[in-house]
Amino acid sequence: MTTVARQVVDTLQELGVRYFFGIPGGNLTDYMEALRRSDMEFVLVSNEAAGGFMALVCGRLTGTPGACFGTFGPGATNLSTGVGCALLDRLPCIAFTDVASDAMLNRTMQMNIDHQALFAPITKWTTRLHPDRVRETLYQAMHVATSEVPGPVHIGLPAGTAGDPAGDEYVQPKPAVAPPAPESAALDRMEQIFREASKPVLAVGWTAVRAGVRSLLLEIAERSGAPVVLTPMAKGICPEDHPCYAGVLNHALSHQVGQTHQQADLVVGIGFDPIEINYEDWIPDVPVLHIDTVTADLDRDRYTLAGDVVGDLGAALRRLAEADLQKTEWDLADLAERRRKMFSRLEPPVGTFGPRAVLAGLRETLPDNGIMACDVGAHLHLIGQQWRTPEPDCLLMTNGWSSMGFAIPAAIAAKLCRPAQRVCCVVGDGGFLMMAGEMATAMRLGVHVVFVLMTDASLSLIRIKQQRKSYAEYGTPLQGEGYESAPSFFGVPVLPARDEPTYRKALKQAFDMDAPVIVEAFVDGQEYDDLLLRGNR
Ligand SMILES: Cc1ncc(C[n+]2csc(CCOP(=O)(O)OP(=O)(O)O)c2C)c(N)n1
Ligand SMILES: [Mg+2]
View 1 (cartoon, protein in one colour):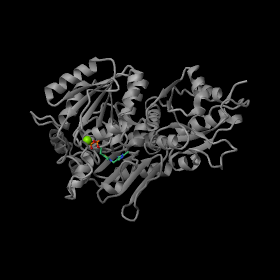
View 2 (view 1 turned 180 degrees about the vertical axis):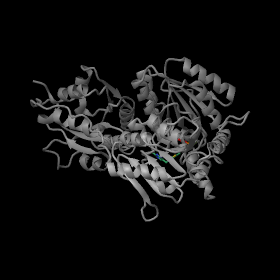
View 3 (view 1 turned 60 degrees about the vertical axis):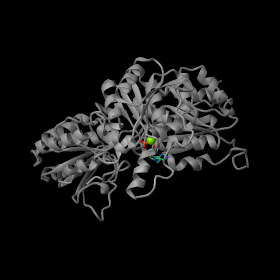
View 4 (view 1 turned 90 degrees about the vertical axis):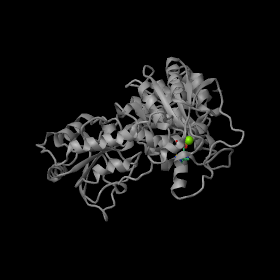
């Protein structure tokens, strides 16, 4: 006889889940004991939101999500911040919470709220575990979470059932389903529309990264000579020095990227997921050809949807790559000049130590296969355009959910998943305050992550927005009277840097260590003001 708790852990392990992140309530102890005896690892976090972020980063980097957990009520609401991230960043995640027993479900009970209602709008599927259907439920959960479009699932663990006998079950795992091939009429039309355009621009999004279509995409771009613009989460799918590379939408200097896409006579969305930026926010007044696993989300009163190719992205792009494509009318020498101008503005001016210098120093120190996780704020907008990204897995960001606090847990999880690779994190001082407790987690795990803390004493992204409306800086400065930086957080040492040579030395020292370390870069956030939030056109 096996118990429900052991059956849950055995089944997760069979499905390839390696980590279970969370903060226990009393009901979880049976599960934790089962985890202790398994090859999986229970990772205690400081806030359940971090556990959610970590679980989805495991999904991103290994294809198999981690599991995460929060107890009743407040544990579940904390966890929901990570779970929502998995939904809007399209990543698999298996979330568990404690839920009331059948008898107490509709009674008044300490910490008790309706978790099914809480998780319904932020998951692909939410359910309650039944002792007779443990395997069936977990197989279904993994199937739903990993099938396109991937996302989170939630399973409530009814109180008092962990030690019950699990039922005998004769069920098989259900593999993820791949999207079907697009309809052939849609493919014919796609090819015709593409051939008829004289200046198509390829707008590549996050779905293209998941679909692994990098080489097909580059082949189409090279054969047609069409420029490529990327959403931030698609960074790395087209190298920054590629002759067709035009830049990233909606981040630093995106108005300069607009000098290219505003010339287009057709926008070809390739795995373009509007969760990062809507078509209407940047496209010129031209038709859209949308190629994705889901149908186009476009204001059809204002814009023409010339083609909507829904299904397997690889199949659609193969059709284009195999077509007899003519060179389009783009002048790639002009494009190269615009690219050069944009990147030269992103170089740190000599003798300054601002956000650009911090990123440039880190990029030079981090090997090409190193992973950088970044948080949300002004620094992210700069990273989006400035950071050279050799391949998509080397940069972890949230630009669908866009939650501050993502980067620190993301970097810790990345190091757990890819121990042989260098891992660092760029986080603003606001985001750091949100997740400072996870320094204790990093220390306990002993993971070598270099946390680069960008201290500009402000919620800079919001400060810039205040300034654009001529409002006062109110509620955005982070350091009041008596504020002091710390020499260490929970044992993680802080190497402070106020100038370039000290910073470079600190980075070297940090990467030479074998334990978590913070490099705190004190910078003037004014440098962002000219570079960010300049629009897309
Ligand atoms: C959880 C959450 N709360 C609030 C926001 C809104 N927000 C976006 S950026 C930002 C400022 C971030 O400040 P900091 O971490 O210091 O980064 P900086 O902008 O200074 O680079 C805020 C408050 C958010 N995205 N996520
Ligand atoms: Mg800041």
